[in-house]
Structure formats: structure tokens, C-alpha cells
Amino acid sequence: MNTLESFIPHPMMERLLLAGIFLLQGLSQACREIGPAVDLGANLLEVDTSYLAAPTSKPSLNILIEEFTGVRCVNCPRAHDLISNLQTTHPGRVLAAGIHTGLFASPYPGRFDFRISEGPALEQLLGGTLGYPAGAVNRTRFPGENLMLISDQKWSGHVNDLMDDSAIVRISMPQSLYNALADRMEGRLTVQWCEELSQNPNSNPVYLTLYLLQNNLIDWQLNTGGVDSQYVHRHVVRRLITPVNGFPLQAPDYRAGRTLEIAFKSVLGKISPMPVWSDCKWLAVIHQNRNNDLTVLQAAQFPFNGL
Image (cartoon, rainbow, N blue to C red):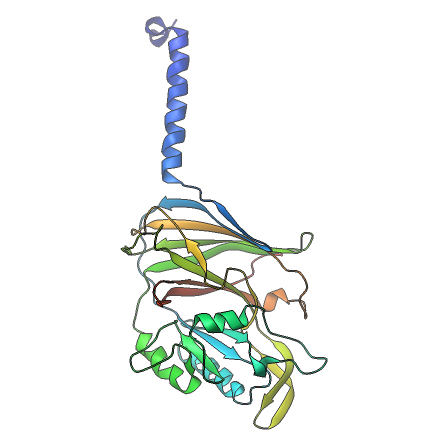
């Protein structure tokens, strides 16, 4: 008999072992908290893990242009080219979401329909527009502007206004795929706070908006020379995975190092043309949604990394 056994009866040893196991389980659950899943019909989102990690340095703020456009909009190709030029000038820092909506987005007979059902509500969320093309730059209403959705001729200046800013959150997407058997897109996002954000996550959360984008869609487009039947459409929003207002990221707090892991699933359903996954990207936007403040805290773009 060893020394420990000579002093502690076997029933007591069993109780101590069980107590130790329960204590470890409790400590583990204190580090990782699981939130409820939100069923949005064809879409399912869930903050399934929350924990504290060592804070990372603040990344550069990416600048998002949510562009409202259409295939019958004669001036929209000008705005498309402007975005391309901005992306060339600021590599990796300027992101775009092309939302086809409104009268000028009606498809030509027998051609593709790039509109999404949420388009009008998205335009309304961002305050509406007096004409097309128009776009929101990081969902910000800049000094001297009456609207958040502004003419493409003003985008460059406001992009430059934000170029030196840093972001307080870092976004990554460790996995995403299309499950052909279930006709479902699936993935995981990680959001980490690099600097404390002093607001109550339960009563005043920040939000996630998640777009599925596709490049290299060839279809008709009106321009100043007529209809171009071989026009290459870029960053077209094919699906909005989250609600129009965004998906609330509730957590115990938003202190530096707070990390949230978000799982999502979305039924693809009827869509034409079928996405070419190598041309598709995810666009994740972390933003406010309070008192007409929709400011983007960070946006990031990710490719599909599996089928």
C-alpha cells in the first residue's frame, strides 16, 4: 500500500477526483461561453464560442464602399472603374459590395437578374439616395454631407480621409465551404477586439453583416456607348447571409482580447447563374447600429477555402 492510500480511504479518493473533474469543467466553461443560435429561415447564425485571449495589435482600417448600381444605369460603369482605380491605388484596403437594386437594376429580357430581395431595405437602412450610382463609404455621414449614400464623384476624397485610421477589431475566417449534398454554404468567422469598446454588448451590441460576392460575371450593361453585351461585373452581391440590420454580436464585454467565434450556415437555393466558387468571396462587416450610427468598425474579405 502506498503512502496516499494509507491515509485516505478509497471513497474519499473518489469524491476528491470527482470534485476535481467538476472544477476543471467549471473553469473551462468560464473561459468559453456558448450563445444561442439564431434561426433566420434559410440562414443560421450562432456566436458559439466566446473567450479572452492575448490582444493583438490594431490592423489598418479597411474602407468599404457599398455601391448601389444596376445594369441599366448609364453612369454606373464610371463608378465601377473608380472603385477599381481606388483598389489599385490602395492595395487590400478598399473593399466593395455591388448591390443591384432600384429601377435601373431591372434585368434585360432573357439576361441574368443580379438583384437581391434585400436591396431596397439595404438602401433604406443607409438613408436612401437621390440617384445612381451612389454609395456609402464605411457607412459614415461625413461633415458637409446630408446623406450617407453619396455620389461616386465624392468617394475618393472620403476614402483618403479614412486611409490613416486603424481598426479596433480583427476579423478572420478559418473555414468556409459549399456543401453540395445539402445545397448549403457553411463557415466560421472569428472576431477579436484589439482595443476595449466601452458599450454594453447586451443592450447595445455591435453587428455583423455578411455578404457573398462574385466577380467575373459577364452580362449586359448600359454605358455611354450603348449596351455592352460582354461587360464584366465585379463584387456583385449574390446573397446577404445576415439580416438587413446585421446580426448582433452579444458577449460578456468588448474588452481588449475578447474573441468571438461565429458559425453560419446558409441554404443556397435557386440562384442563376450558379456561383463559380473560385470567383466568390465573403465580405464580413463589423459595424454599429444605434441612433442612426452605422459606422463600420472593420471590414474584411475572404475567399472560399473548400468545397
